[in-house]
Image 1: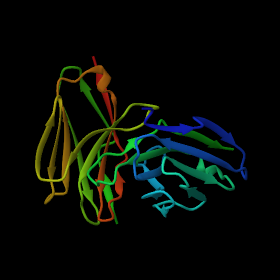
Image 2: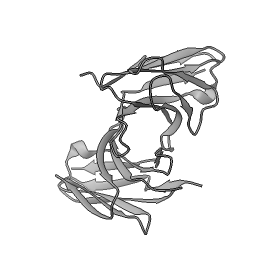
Image 3: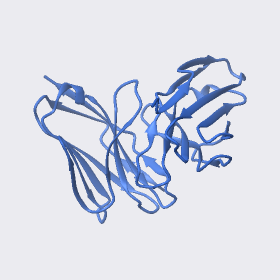
Image 4: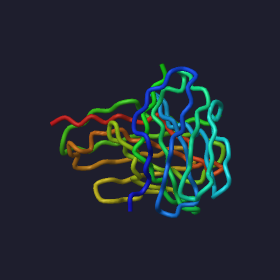
Length: 113
Length: 109
């Protein structure tokens, strides 16, 4: 099993450009999450999904959109990138049982110039 | 507001024991997680506590006191590979994880 994978691993954008980050998991997990991690701060939840076809806003959703058309995939879109979106983005997934841990992808390092 | 506090950085010696503390104030409590994150890598799960007391797992143990809003992660027989950041996260009333900023642990020979 590959677990949770993310593409791309690195990306540099100019302000105003758009891009989509792809997360895929092969563990048949119901829940999927997108976080951003910035220096000196905890992981912050951007959006999450509790199942195929569902999405919900997290703590910092502005400037991002998501889609979960297939259970195994969770896409994060930036429509018009801003320098404040420079960060490391992590995708995570877990089963439907709350006490189960989240499994993380390797991360995408995004720089917006 | 919701808040998770943990020390920014700690230093310990190879072979020794270190305790990393975490205090929290959250809207509801459905468990506390500890994760390990090596530099440039993804967080990986270490432990989960939902009841008061100590959970032991090899060289790592985690303690929880819900009445005090307090947890610690205890690492014994430190090895150089334990150099990493340790993240404390609390599951709130909405079953979302609220994350601390992490404690960077530096192990010296």
